[in-house]
Image (cartoon, rainbow, N blue to C red; front, top):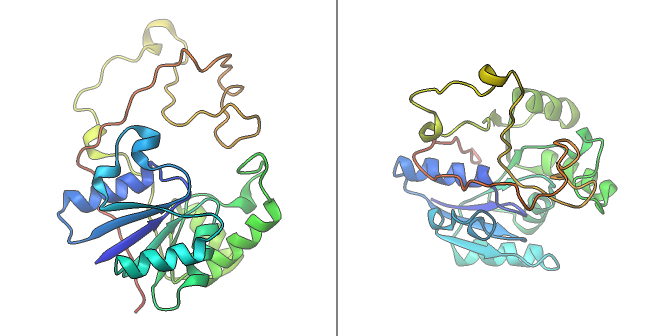
Length: 233
């Protein structure tokens, strides 16, 4: 089976799916369409778990998706939000390839834009189209599943949470720092943005004055989980 992942910016969830398939030696070829950066460009690793990354032109999405499907003999598309525009482009571009929509977020649930200059009205339309016209759905939580079903109707779907990698679960636990000084210690692993109102703007939440001195730790790709995937009956 040849699977095409779609996500504007490939992220750790994409990587976990790929690790899951590789860990069980699944006979699947994985391709990833994107518009921003590859996993390795953003995180420093990850591209090696996919057969190919395919850069999509924002001005020519439907044709680029058609070309990727034709060239790589794609059997199924797994498109992750948010936002939802790549799912919509895939639905409009293809009639004979199933499209699974993976809901990790919902624009209609947000009080702030996903991007500072986002066209929220268009994103809300895309969210509706993606969830009503996809062939199957995946949701990150039961609550997300309930919300989407109540708002857009039921689909063949499943909940697949953001599970912790098995390899990252410690075999022994050290004493918490808070046990020594009674203070709260937070480790944030993820993206930081400097644009006010951005989805990843965390400076005020953590009272950070500068990100220049913040240490970062590259995730370790090891054995992970196997995912559920759906297709048309």
